[in-house]
Amino acid sequence: MITGAGSLEERVARLRRERGLLTPAELMDLADEGVVVLDPFSVIVSRRVRLHPENVLYPGVVIECDEHSGCLVRRGNVLHGGTLITATGGGTVVIGARSEIGEGGARIRAAGTDAIDIGDGTRLAGGAEVTGTSRIGSGAQVLGQVSARSVTLAAGHPYTYPDPDGRGAVLKGFGRALGIRLGVGEVVNGSGDFRDAPVERQRIYHPEAPHLA
Image (cartoon, rainbow, N blue to C red; front, side, top):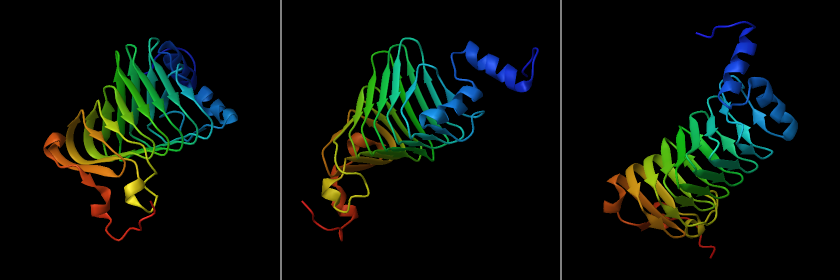
């Protein structure tokens, strides 16, 4: 229960300021900088987060960054409801441009010495989680309830590119992916421990796709 003097909006604003968060009014003011926040009362963004223009934040997005950490979201991303991004205790999160994050939920969490670097045109969806010091290269994807820790996924074209041999690397399925390193056009479709699953070419799942290389 929110107590104290003032209207509901004033009390919500006070609670957020006390916790280093942008108020609903300040979130709406981001529109002047080209950031679209569709529901400022359900979106939580720390004051230390840097949001570039053309980002779209759906209801239920949370981006938290403490005073010892850093979080940068470059332009043109879509953050769906259920997206949680946290940088704590010195961790850093950098998200490139034009990515699709959180359709079906996604968590990106950097703590301590962790540094998470997510490139341009990536896709994290279906309950994906990225932790540790991880590099999700441009065009790469983490799909499904995959807990990816300290992984390196090679950059390539985005998933819309017609030739799968040129696409960024992919982790999909469900389970734990620890220390996995994948090259361009590669995929691991795991269930459980991803280290037990084979590394495959994405073309296996798209046999009729053209060869453009």
